[in-house]
Length: 96
Image (tube, rainbow, N blue to C red):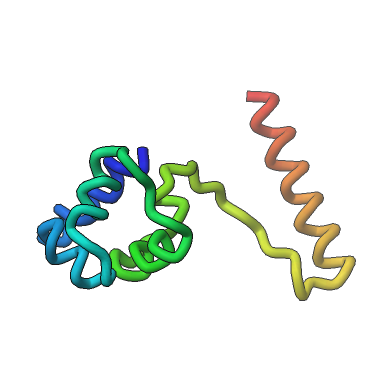
């Protein structure tokens, strides 16, 4: 839950609700409302929280992280090699 994640990150950083509010330029009541699930931070504040706590918005939102392979910049032959490798690994896992 977003509320639990914000509280965890804030406490791990050793910040009070008031201190976090000052850093974000919001009221302590806003931070409290986020942590009590009475409201949720806007996209602007999600980004600010992620930057402040050196994490991702996905972490704050509680989304599962997935590993990705970026194919941008690869030529067709390189992409084909990546696809073939993924197929090989997938087939091996299915055999196990």
